[in-house]
Image 1 (tube, rainbow, N blue to C red):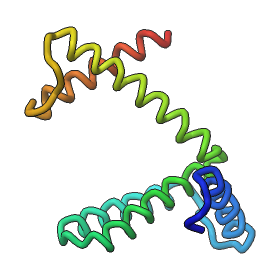
Image 2 (cartoon, one colour):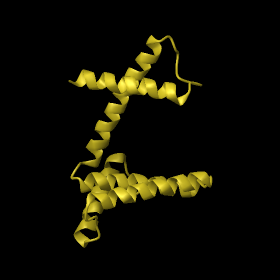
Image 3 (spheres, one colour):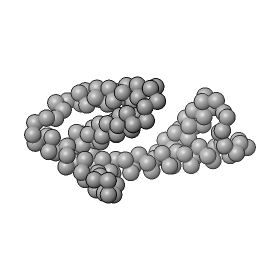
Length: 132
């Protein structure tokens, strides 16, 4: 499996989720999978706090898998869904960089989170306005 490319990986997750569904071991409703994602977030935090890199890698993988399962459960193509999200992130980040530079700052290093989030919120607002 490690020699597969990212597209094979997306196909594999869809195939695996369909196998699970066909076998009857699947989510009955949205809340169940959302609870699983919440539980995986807790496990990621616990592994992080223990500084256990191997366990952290395992738990992050479980979290990613759970979110891909969510996409399949909602009849969304995980690959296309992630590609759209990445394009949105790139667009917002580009807007954020423009806003920061327009304010005469070279970057946001050493700025408090509140300042970073303020720029992020402005970038999001700008993208929402531009999409209407």
